[in-house]
Image (cartoon, rainbow, N blue to C red; front, side, top):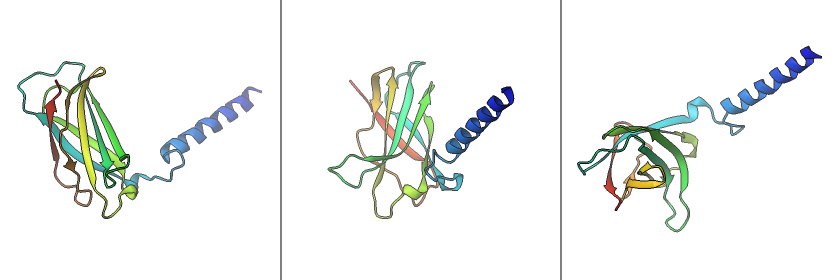
Length: 140
């Protein structure tokens, strides 16, 4: 009976591992995943609290009157001080020629927003060389 339990347990773990590695059945492969890299900064001469975190998203903003689809999202915990580096990993097969993509970001401390984007930061997904620099504004 113990051997049967081990076999069943091993099979379940193997199935969950396969689903996780394949994107939960979504068909994503490591070759489909690409990275958008950049830096976040702000102009104010202030220190961030030790508990600050950066939340940053890559969105399809093609349709102005529709909810923007999120292609990738990253949270950087315990950011330290600026500049803050980030990497957004996303599935390149979701990229559509002719669509408009943008990155927005916020620095949070708990549920309180400290800094945010106030303009559109376009992301050129056809040319992912270099760093996308985002300048945030202080939230009052």
